[in-house]
Length: 357
Image (tube, rainbow, N blue to C red; front, side, top):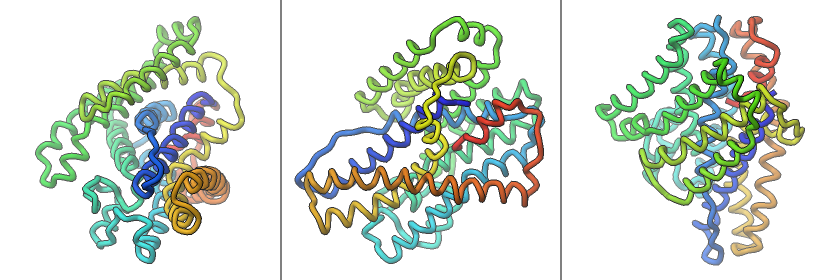
């Protein structure tokens, strides 16, 4: 069980939700100003995805079944939340003021293709979906690498990642150039390198005889420093990726080779974190507007938004995990013939079952 990783993933998704509440309050209220950044949460979210990808991959995995398994885990809830967002934009457009319901943008949102919204951001209609565009892209590259021998798969994935960032400079549309040329893709590659490192005997011996908590503290402190620097582009990745990688390495090493954390709250949080990530924009859009419009648009309203949006998002994410994500995943795997047994260890199977992305 990847309890420490689940803890980080839970905190990351909660921090992202808090950040979006902060953005709404600052944009909608003349009485309250909040300061909060979720940059560490986004970077950890992406890097953990790369690590999980390597950790749950079997030597027997083949490209098409692999990408299909990832797709049936990621896409159903994203499409469901996107459909709700589309309905909200159609009937209450002020709830998602950045979104535009052209046929082109709807199709691009569904397919996770980059385009500029009404505020020139590379956001789909359900704006948090921009990270899923990177995740599915990286899954695709990793699936292609499965055609090579096991020892070449991760180096090939990293090479494709670097090649894509370079090649993106010649893509025909500005949105594609900016999105696929973003060095943030390297954070997925960093996650894969952590997964590869944790297979090496020398690294395993080091972790078994060395406490991981000092590395986790250094990584967390480094993320706080990076968040205060406000860099962009390559400089941003250079400041965020190393401490994020150190924190994920320490957490994964603690989980796999030492005594893992065993907090049931964070274990559940890891399971529902993907739901929190996708559901909170819908909850925020509805409740924040209602509260600011009909109760108060100052400090009281801000407190009510936090007290409403966060618990409601967690509750709905739990319901989604129990009654939508898990059943739909099992059903689609069965229908598509993806439920066969593998030679993976029991611990890896559990990790795969709990992996959010």
